Amino acid sequence: MTNPFSPEISDRICKHMNEDHADAVLLYAQVYGNTATAISAAMLKIDAQGMDLLARNETSEIPVRVTFDHELQDAKEAHHVLVEMMKQARQNANA
Image (cartoon, rainbow, N blue to C red):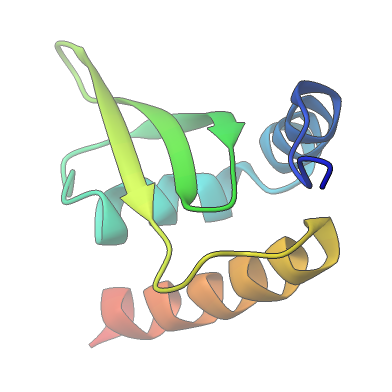
């Protein structure tokens, strides 16, 4: 069985998220990574179990691991899960 999150796929997803959805990546770090003081974040890696982020606050960089609630099967599922997580994070941030 092939790895659904090869380094190339992970890099592609991270590049897309960092370039086009930086606001969502920051929300992931703040809400799911418990780094409420983060002012920016970057997605470094994604795999079937979760994603590695690097959050930044005023004084430091904080490595953050966000674990998914289930193991993802492929990049298409990752897209759906990331969108749903963003929606939930926005609701939590506005609550």
